[in-house]
Length: 375
Image 1 (cartoon, rainbow, N blue to C red):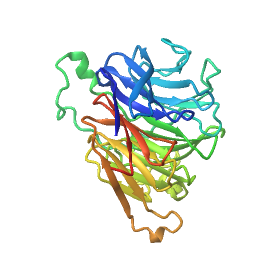
Image 2 (tube, helix red, strand yellow):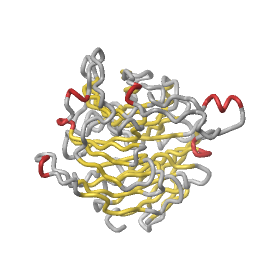
Image 3 (cartoon, rainbow, N blue to C red):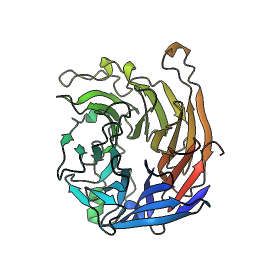
Image 4 (cartoon, helix red, strand yellow):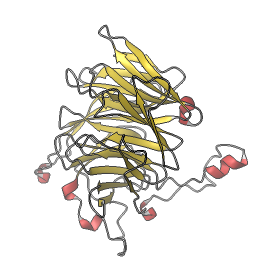
């Protein structure tokens, strides 16, 4: 297992370069992302196994996610806590080459289009997603889901919550509603225009950015608890995974999401709507909320997830989407990577070399590169 310490900065996102087999970018934030600067690291894995910093940029606010450009081998985009998105170039030191500022709250996710390659999508706590092109100074499209707050589980009474602070202004900020926060948005690797997103009111939403009404599918995925992450299976175009604060990773077949689970705006919700549809498979094992889930680029049945329980788990999903009656909900946790000493936030599979290598980063200021087959 190889490691690198992002000293003074807590890791939020990590991604392998799609062009170089030895480059990793890491998005970090000082003070656990609560307040202070951010830093984007680009790391090189040397042949002797050392990980060294090639270049890094300091930003005004914490960085929560990043995405390598699919059309330029030296460019990487980063999502910032001040609502801006920055494009950095490895050959241009110190400052970003582009800066977009349209979101009004923290940008929590950026994802580059893997098919079209000319655009990327961002998701923000302001409840919107925006489509961007690196050539354009403003966004191409804004997706704004109509929020259905009735699907959220009832909040803990404010009287039962411990006060986070004795200062008046901080106590008011405890009542921030996270139901419309979009935590993750990801382009499908099978289509240039299909996006999946998850939000704080437990919904998974599928969008077609070319359609006049972009929202195609909308369902409750985690029983009213916040959905934090989603990803597309790289081999089966209708299979997706979602993860949330109910500690589970759920596998869905989008063909099985029926209309009864996504009622129209003008018709009342059925009484059981918080249950939502039935997943193909449910992977249980994490002790706390699952922060990120990602399918393997090498295997249609393998995925990894990171969690606030300080572990990364490698899963096998043995569910058969062709014959659901044969589904014995088998498969499950194949291995656990327990090297981190704090919340694990970001992970990524390597596209290069022997299948199974992955990178993870978290609040312990560490980036680990490890082989998921040898845990």
